[in-house]
Image (cartoon, rainbow, N blue to C red; front, side, top):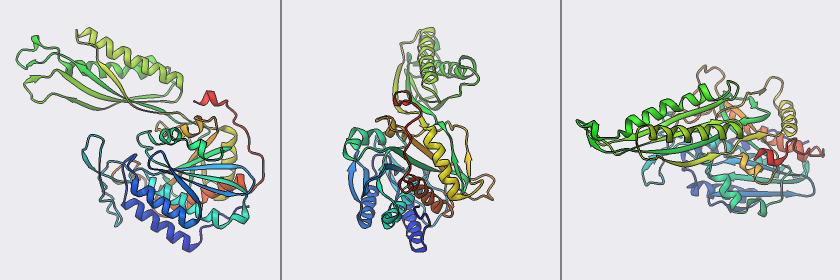
Length: 416
């Protein structure tokens, strides 16, 4: 069996990598320095590698005959001003697509993912006598915008590496450090973000009779949109419809000519997703018609796929992680309404996948900061070593046991 311990010198290097990555985050699809850093580490280990999808990096560790297992770690940061007080806190800035300069922080823990994956890659390469097969290490950009996995697939990822039997991935989460959470089957939601432009007729604030007020119209739309989840969906069909921004007007005594708002929609099945999106379009257009306004413009900003943990492989991973971490350390979680683009890597070629969460919070903290918070800072240990051990245990389960890799329990077409 593959040795999963993290020697003292490798633990020190792991912590150093984490501090460096945390202090130098980059925005989605702009991870140029991060990609170069990963390439340098892979070269030092002796693992062949190449760029893919712009700022993505792929390493291939070939070690004779055996299964091919892919493991993914995402690399991008977020436009957040860090407020953790850590000595290695980020002072980095970046630019959004519109040119706006913003602070950048690893507010979702992708720095822990990269550090853990690089350390696991080194330890596996050091222990090549203990396993046989091939590991494809995928360092994926742009998870936060759902652009990265598609960019890598579109750039020929699966034509450039051996086809894997299963794809594995993990994410730090504010559960107690040293624990693992995992969800069989549907584990994270589909997500759709829309921009709605509402058109009206501009007028002086003292002459509302000459206007079509896009602000009032937008408010009618938003109030009615909330009835989708409460009155159009069955109570056991989870969905979230959130308005995250609303912008209109420049002066208090001018009724503007248009308003803009954005929606974020979360669902767990393709059928409910289609129902909610159809309801959004119907309501937005109908409210405009009722107000005598022009038809609004509905634009897709981005979309995340469903993430479906293959049941047979999930059962095997639960067993491997439980054996590694001990009784009570692996917990079965209900589905999360958060989203990930990890699923596209497997769905694009019909390969099963498994994704889990490793805890990053102080077990004594009753209210740990959550992902995407300016205060999000996983405790360094046992968070990082758990991420390394989980990766080694999961990959090693396939490459050191010699057991057959099961086929997916659900046809690929049903998971897309």
